[in-house]
Amino acid sequence: MQSVHPETALSELAALIKTWGRELGFQQVGIADLDLSEPEARLLDWLAAGFHGDMDYMARHGVKRSRPAELVPGTVRVIAARMDYLPPDAADPWAVLHQGDLGYVSRYALGRDYHKVLRNRLQQLASRITAAIGLLGYRVFVDSAPVLEKALAEKAGLGWIGKHSNVLDRRAGSWFFLGEIYVDLPLPVDQPTPGHCGRCTACLEICPTRAIVAPYQ
Image (cartoon, rainbow, N blue to C red; front, side, top):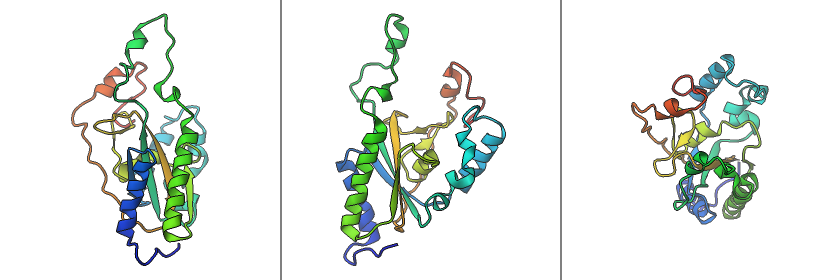
């Protein structure tokens, strides 16, 4: 890990990182530590129950998915970023489902390839951090490696994990992409967002294939 510029405290740098993130088009940026012991236990139980079906890649990398420092040695923090993809003035995304003469394309696929968009912007964010402090050890991820991104997003305060196992934001719902930067810089971490599901089970009840067999499963 490189030393932070003496005039830039880690807390000030963390605030700058979030400002730069918004300038680059992210709706929210947060910082998480690496303790994913609870999500790891849930992941192992989920795999043991066979809930991953044919997604063999979920079990392929062992616990590296939940141990960032084993995937990228030297990592001490994860910068998590959220980018919304449903415009606030978008037409009702469900209406077209009832029009049999129309094809339906998932909303996330209507724009540019999100892997490229997020990766480019995360690289720009990492470059700004490097310019501020000197050398920085980092690696950018956007659905490209075994990363427990939903758990990291929750720890970084980007939302809470709902009973359907997706990350939720009170305004954006779950209509957003996630990306991460693993860094070797001991930035101050953010507090997780408290859950707001309460007794609601709407996601379980509306699932057309009943794939959600129980809350959080």
